[in-house]
Image (cartoon, rainbow, N blue to C red; front, side, top):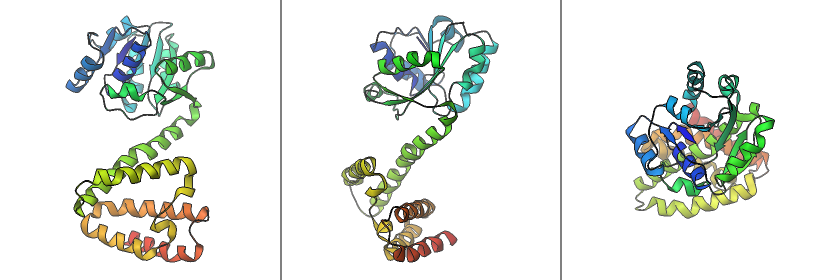
Length: 286
């Protein structure tokens, strides 16, 4: 097994596969952080250029940023670095196996295995893979191989059709990446309000909200928007303009989306929605 791209994902997946009996033989990385990650998670594994990773490995993990993946695959194919029968696995959420077509034409066996998990680049990532869902896309004849690799890493395979990969990835980014931004903004605002430990205050609240949302979906909506408290929302917008103007656009966008969903699911009374939507429209116009 080899790894091309020692970012936060590759070394963790390789370490998990090593625990399952695969033998890491080579890893490539350029930045100082990549070198440190490889040394920590894959000790004693040689750090070599990508072409040498390909030469030494039967199973290769391509764990580079999404935008770099097509060029990397084309370059490996054009230089003859790919061997027939070589398992080539990328971990991009955006792409299925079509991005590996140049490698497939060179005889490689293409798999797309995307872990639905956020990575820190430390050993804790290997533990987090236990029970983690993977978005799996592969040719039908390689489906069992793809699912077996996911299970060996401790994950749960979830089949994603090729055409659905961009939507699948957008959903994960909407839920996870934007959540980090929202939480970070909330902690900054709480500090401005004088809260000494915003993480301690938010932890139980956000944990309960997430659990409720996963269990009940839109039925878990609470707060001033879902209740139709237009005056409270107007006060929020005024305070945010005064203390954190950079958060206003996000607040208004999420409030409008929340209002639409609350209305559609019968949580927000239509007679209260008019004033609330008026406050949001006024805020957007300013």
